[in-house]
Image 1 (cartoon, rainbow over the protein chains, first blue to last red):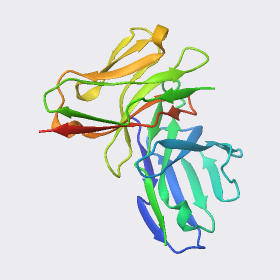
Image 2 (image 1 turned 90 degrees about the vertical axis):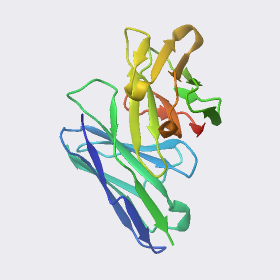
Image 3 (image 1 turned 30 degrees about the horizontal axis):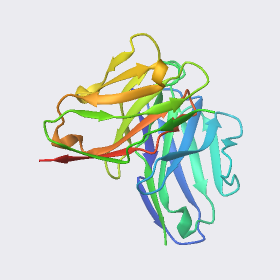
Image 4 (image 1 turned 180 degrees about the vertical axis):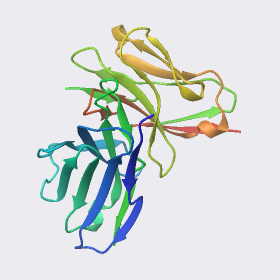
Length: 117
Length: 110
């Protein structure tokens, strides 16, 4: 099946620094990628929808200047958490649609756990 | 707007017992429905999905789910639970911008 890979899987950073998380579709082209955030013992909350070559669409309440999303190619989307603070510590998961596959099916990355000290 | 409700936050079953996890959805059209499983600190694994056709869908690991339009439900079932099934289970609805339920944590007693 289609594979989505995230990197890094874990990252620890100091408050005030920026962190970049990559999401790659390894064996398919993804026109659309999605970024989710998951707090401990909670569900996944959609943060933004990222379309290749265009600006991301952010969900209500998500700061676009805080969470920068770039989808420059059909196989790569990046999420940059700028000036990270401890409250940004969370599990971030990306997903992608296989434009050649079944409509509506998403393939998820393994997730990236961010800890801000 | 599309939404998903998983009424049970935590369920405990004995190993070998049957399991049913509930999921109710709200969606404007024919929904795409999914069940995912997540082990601690891990990503999501797709158990099964429903797009159209037969309302009883079979998934991996012996799981199945039944789509009932009249009840707006998509409950997940397994006839005999194994200790390795202990995890968090998420029901999701949508196409693309998928919406997730709050999740049900499954504990399996020996």
